[in-house]
Image (cartoon, rainbow, N blue to C red; front, side, top):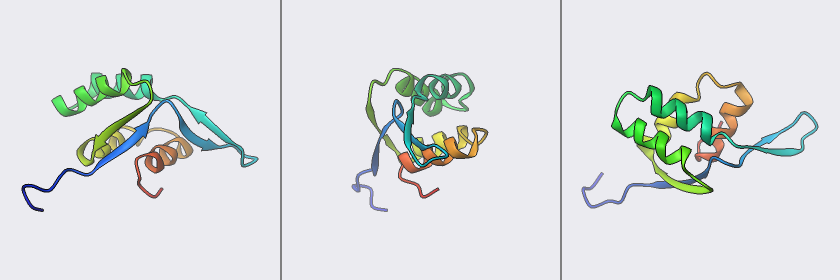
Length: 95
């Protein structure tokens, strides 16, 4: 990776994480408060703590880089399968 290469940014709206119910209907969940609080309170470094604050205070789409995507994925590992998969899809990761 070249030094001048820009970081790949992903736009994610943690207020509208898309889930399909058992009938296939799309529903949206807002996970910014629980996820933001979890990252802020349990973050292992300043990046994770500040990401928690950024998610908590978001009111729509925010841009996150690959390091932040990795933190989100790490902190959603204990979430239920469907929610975890929906968050990964929202972050541009095939679930």
